[in-house]
Image: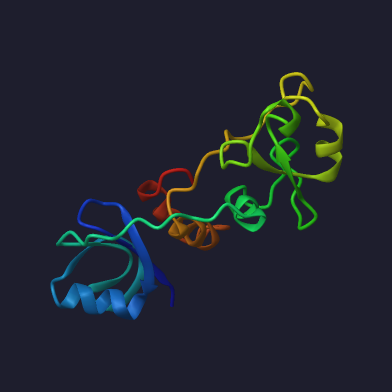
Length: 165
């Protein structure tokens, strides 16, 4: 049937769950329904796509490791200079390492080989190349899951509850 985005009482995304688990939370009064599509479970009970817990749940912060795979996931496997998609992307340092640019979330982007070679040992401004988006640290690992589930036309109603997708 589908997945459901679960929000904390503060409206921050907590996780993605099955529609069955979401319905149980709704029936037990532990959550409220915020969004739903046209589907219905019963004649008067629409199938939820976003629910919010009635009570705040404290979740410990978990650092997302800076890896090639995670940088490409953050950038949705799209070259940040020319919008090319694919699995053959490289990692580019926005500020080159030779100029003091480090391995940080804010300095690494996915780039196709052609753009990476074209940019070379220059900054994007010097190479007259603009970035699609300013690179930044992802908010949580849930961010990657939400990106996967909002591809195409599915779960578009999730976007208003998640920053940066």
